[in-house]
Length: 354
Image (cartoon, rainbow, N blue to C red; front, top):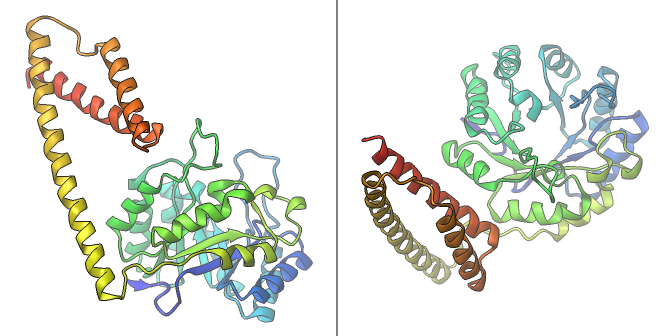
């Protein structure tokens, strides 16, 4: 596997308008972004797959010469989203440097395979966004399809996941899924897309900084010369100048300290974490042993597994204790629910005689 950004400084910075709208808009955006000195790749949507018909679905192939011209003027490589074979063919014809596959396409293995087959024998860099829903296997499977046709310059884009109950973000980040992807495929660079995660300008820096703190390889951020009048996703776009300042304000930390004394301190702290984690695993194992004994008691006494009042009492107690110790209610609820779900599963096995 070739590292797509092997000779590139970190983070790799991809920016540009959500959609190419006019030649003047594309050129001016590209020139102003280039002036910031904070961009490595110019992106623009040519075809825009939308959730419902009637919305602006992209300018189409006539926007590709505009990107060509922007590339000539700025020297920036250009990136375009593709969703089918004809898109791939047109991008190759117009000298697009990097292709990306969007979230709506990643959910469809047939579509990903079609794009992969169209690229067989053409080792152009390809970035794969996570699917709309939180499905790690689908994301990994899409990457494997690209690998199997011989593509080696690959990267992943984390753009968050759709969630009906989400109140803050356009797409919930669910960082652990991106981390799990990096764990499964450590050779694949991971790009974060704060624009689609947030859906709003005021949260872009926060999400971009977290991605850098998690050692992501780069960022893809949408920028437009007049964001408020953009033809698509206006609320999440920022001017090139605001984009440049956002990047300048990021704190880029070292993956590992170079100073020997600091590295020794970090190693010690990590060992402490490891020891605590071992204790947690031991405690959980002990808890589940008791849960199985309770399951046996309930079976012998013909009792239901779920005791609702007991569960409410338990959850309330731990939320209170957790918040008193500086832990968020959401975190405590998630942990306790997971433990409770496993306890029920263990007791169900007892009830079923396993």
